[in-house]
Image (cartoon, rainbow, N blue to C red; front, side, top):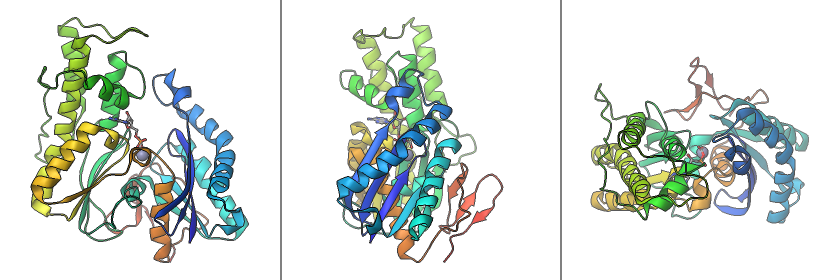
Length: 358
Ligand code: KG4
Ligand code: ZN
């Protein structure tokens, strides 16, 4: 079965052709990073306009690279939330029109479930119960998937997502956008124990994440020590490199503290670490160590599948299509969609259930 996946939830226009949910025939990603970099972050209006320009050529390229004709595609899977509304609408409407024109099924996929499925291409089949730490620029969630297609949200961030914290800290250090890769690069040359930044404690005792306190601690440290941001084209000082390393070390420890606690309690067979922040080597190494100490297998996607892509959307779509699920023609973009116990799409805004048509 050939599924065409389409992803346009944020600043990547992506299309992929995936065979039988596990084999990537093509995965094309057109990133808008260079356009948004000059603004220091994603500008939603610009993002949706760029998606409009790119979606058709990106789908064409995905078909061409896969060596298949449009008529060979069996179904279309598209991200329909969460994400930026204008960006999501481009992908959803394109996918719906394409599928309807071809007379083939289509299915809306939750972007977070897509990240969950990003590990299926390069690892053994997922064993359940699985625990998944999904860490990106927009999300920081820890799920337990007791069985395929069911997701229980164990923890989430109360404020900033982990990737957002990397992006904001990089911005205040004058290191540009996106922050994750550049902080990781300079962290390699710094001392992770140089500065003690705090790991947030949630006052109501829930095992949630919080990153805004860490970000504020970095701001305070810069102010108290009179440290200026790096000027464009300049090599960062050792002090800045130490801040990068200490911040990264604290962010990773923040992520794994809850994960360790809940994994000990719930004993999953597999730990999945996915999303853009899963590119981070310090997080990978620490997750491997944690998994080893708990006797759990850890699955990562390779780096090009950690950040947003359409192959993971096609894989998640394939899973649902195999179960006989289809989206109806009134499928729409929903920025508030959550991944819930039942596998149903539930709007967080009004609790409205958006069931699959079986
Ligand atoms: O999954 P993704 O491409 O998009 C979202 O769904 O948000 O994740 C992008 C995020 C950005 O915040 C970026 O700074 C972060 O992932 N990121 C990293 C690394 N590479 C990307 N964070 C830490 N270390 C990295 N190496
Ligand atoms: Zn993502």
